[in-house]
Length: 197
Image 1 (cartoon, rainbow, N blue to C red):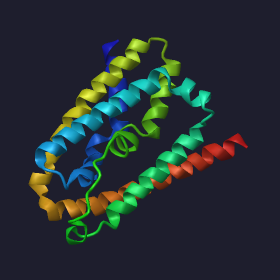
Image 2 (image 1 turned 60 degrees about the horizontal axis):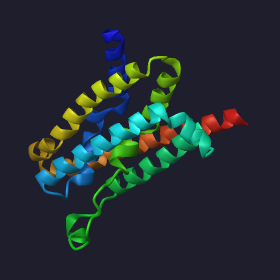
Image 3 (image 1 turned 90 degrees about the vertical axis):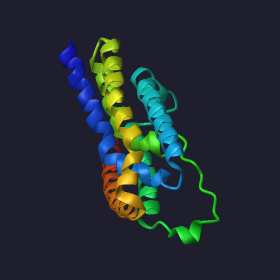
């Protein structure tokens, strides 16, 4: 029983990909002080957990209620991620933005689609449908999120390690990777849409 829960938790953790998403999250909070970064990232990880649990219990019913199909979730998530990627790749130098107040990330884009994205939502809904024991899926999500929160909470230390120049390079590199991921999500959404025709 525990081994199957752990295997499911590992699957959720890998789909969430907090390690791979660290540069993207840090790029979004790099203009805040160290304490604020940790607070923002911990809050967003908690919101991502709530989104994951929501989609376990209500995802399929909620999307059906408002008539949103799987392809729409994938397309929308891909477009949002692509816009984030563009802002990371073509970010302005600090001297150009020093007087412009930066809006603090709130739910979008860190909690979703970076952490709790369409891929995680889909796999959670699929396992919730196939697994008769809801507690097993919930336990797997909670175990996965112990790892997610641990990685996300330690992310600001990477800024101290790499410095601002290193983080800019990571930001642009991660922006390119996010652009590729977003295109993959958009293509998946188009494929799902074509299958409905």
